[in-house]
Length: 124
Image 1 (spheres, one colour):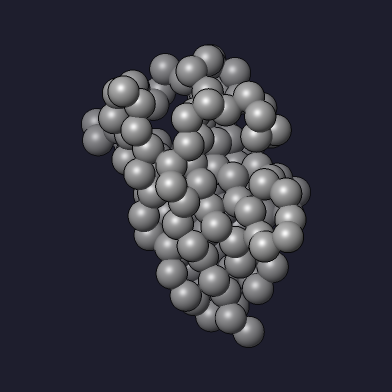
Image 2: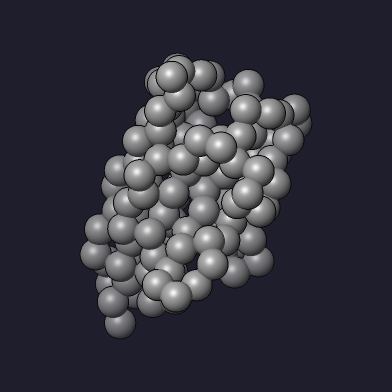
């Protein structure tokens, strides 16, 4: 059974940093696409960072480019999202997701396995 468990969210002041973790079981991260999504109240779920396993190149949404970095610790089968210079607009519930295939998408629908989410709140 595939399981994803996020952690690392919290309350931080604008300009601060957080590092989210996503521990996986039931599959190996570097064999499939992985993505970090976020959803703010009243808004659609949006992709923040993603990586296809066929090329291993990470991508970020324009809104977080230069501030967020996706990485994977293969030894511990854990994905991370390093978030720097956080802004109040980054406040959301953050999820990691995988879809059982090698190619990542920026839409949420193709992803079939999701974690429970971890809340990030950025204050002014």
